[in-house]
Image 1 (cartoon, helix red, strand yellow):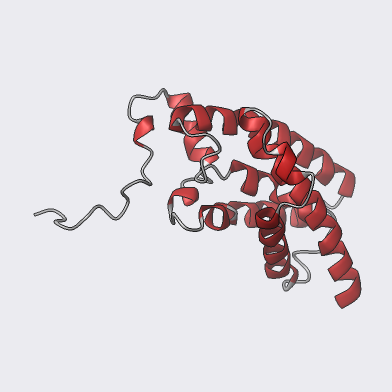
Image 2 (image 1 turned 45 degrees about the vertical axis):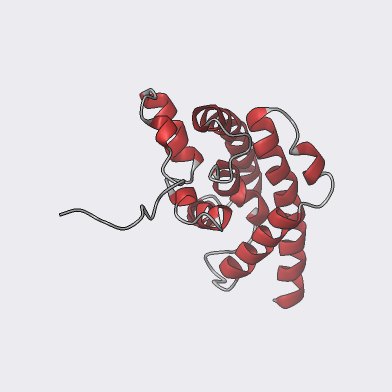
Length: 176
């Protein structure tokens, strides 16, 4: 017997990957936040950000040098652009909401230098700040999202993450 009701994943499963190459399927998997961007059609960016929380915590725990954290964030930015580009081309939809590479790969930008592993309340606080600023898209974030392909997908989040970095540091200095 099989499931007789409507497909609960209708519209979420990336059918475009059925004939795709391994590299395209890998880009879609990474581009959708290890599949978390496919979990909920109403909040893909929030679910797709979750790997970024782990990534930011790992940076805080294992990379004490702020400059190395910043350099890794720049590298992740330049890695996210081709992943988002291939993912967008494979899914055949401009700035598909299921593409969350920008959310999770750039998440550590907004937490550079913060003691996330020593002060655990910072993790949920930074998550909320990051998500709010990503949704609001203060200028010039809204404008740069119109850049072509992966550049637009990733650049608007980079701008939002920089705003979030300033807000997170301000909150940390105020609340500690």
